[in-house]
Every structure is written in structure tokens, then in C-alpha cells.
Length: 335
Image (cartoon, rainbow, N blue to C red; front, side, top):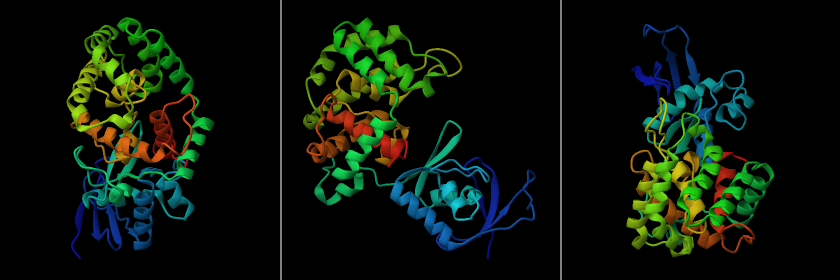
């Protein structure tokens, strides 16, 4: 059988025989591109198990550390089966070549996401394809919200920022400060490289205040294709205003920060996301984030229409509860 070339997510080359649909024999290479003399056999049962977990979870951490894989990761699951987490370094890149999954890096950890067919905003999400966007049932949704209440320790900052936005509405300078309260804590992983320019954010709010006021009065149920142009304009304006303004990462953009800001400004309408949540719903925002956010708004509306009878919002908006469910399931893996 012919040897084929493969490469790990870290760019380390290896050779292999077999198929990702059957079994593999992997031959690691040294720094000079020569076989190390080690052969790594990987059986079909292991490959099928990994595919099944990714299929069920949607998004999951890789965890390829041989001796101490991360909790709830694929590596930890393999370790518990008596198999090496390092198998993942070979299996996952080959599954990505087969378009089964995509991967991304968050901090020092790799994550994989089940690749799903992407929908356009104009596509109507009907009952026939509702499972494609992973709408939770009542029990799962309530469980996710309860787990968030149990473990979501940073929600105090959300409450403070929400109060400040309401209190200082129509005062762009104070509103920018209020957004900073949330963004520099909830999005600390991004802004640790440098802050955004508060003056630029203030100007963005001032220029878009009338449009923001309109959306603040609305709910996600009113989202329609007629809103697309306005939302894209808002999204792109805030994307520029919230870019890192200093340091080595100057100019770096954060679609996550934009969604957080828009949600605070119109909490019944604009949904929140992070990288893992966006990918779980097939919204790959690396290239055209505003377009992907429109898709996510459409998906959130569909989920809201199903979840509106699941739980009483009380002092939270339904959009926020949907985010809490998503965060529990896709970001943290609590359910």
C-alpha cells in the first residue's frame, strides 16, 4: 500500500498507510523528514469513536497531551479507553482533509468543530431542517441555563454593564465606558494584547445612536431580511471601533466583542456568540463576520421561537438565556 503524506495541526509531517474510513498505520518523521522507526497502528473502532463524539458534541477540545489530557477533551476520552491521546494528532487532520471537521486554536489548546452545511440568511429554517441548527428541547435548554447560573461567575459584570447602559443611554461617552466594563472582562482573552480606543467607540455610538435606539425597542422575533443592511452597517462600524488600538496586536478585530457590544445596546434583539458557539452553528466568521452574524441572528430567531415557552425570562431577556444555554453546551461543555 502506498505511503501518503500527512501533517499535524502544528505542521509536523508524518507518513501513513490506510484510510480514515478503515484503519491507519502512521509513521512519525524526525526533524530531517526521515522515519523515526516507530509505527503507530490506529484501528477503525478508535476512528469511528472519535467521529461519533465529534458528531454528537459538535465542538470539542482536542486534548492530545499523552499523559495529562484536558478534562472533557477527546484525548481524555481516549485515555480512559486505554488508548493514546496522541492518536488525535494524526486522525483529526485527516478527518479535516475529508471535510468532516474544522479546527481552531484558542489560547494554547486546539478545538475541533463538526463541519455542517452553511445556510444563507435568506434560507428559511423550517421544521424539516430544524435539527441542522441544533435546537434544544425544553429539558436540555433549562439544564443549560441552570448550569450557567451555577458556574457562570462573571455574570455580575453583565448586570453592571446593563445597568450602566440603561442609566447613561443617549450619552455616548458614558455608554462607551459602560461597554468597556463588560468587554475588558468578558473578552479579556482578546484585549489582554491591548485595549480598543474609547474615543473611537464613543464616536461610533454617537454616529449610530438613532439606529441603536430603534433596535433597542425590538425583539429578535422581528428580525427579517429587511434588517440585513442596517445590521451589517452597525456590525462593521463596531468592528472597526473595537479593534485593538495599541501594542503588537494593533488593528486586530474581534467579531465576538462586536456581538457583546450590540447585545448590551439592544439586549432583546442582538444575540451573543463566541468562537465555539459560532462554529457550533456553522457561522464561520473568519472571512465575512458581518454576513455570518446575520446568519446567527436568523438562527437565534428560530431557536427563540421554539424556546419562548421553555422558561420564564424573569430579569433576563430570552436572547440572553439562549446565550447561557449555548455557553453551557458549546463553550464550556457543562451539558
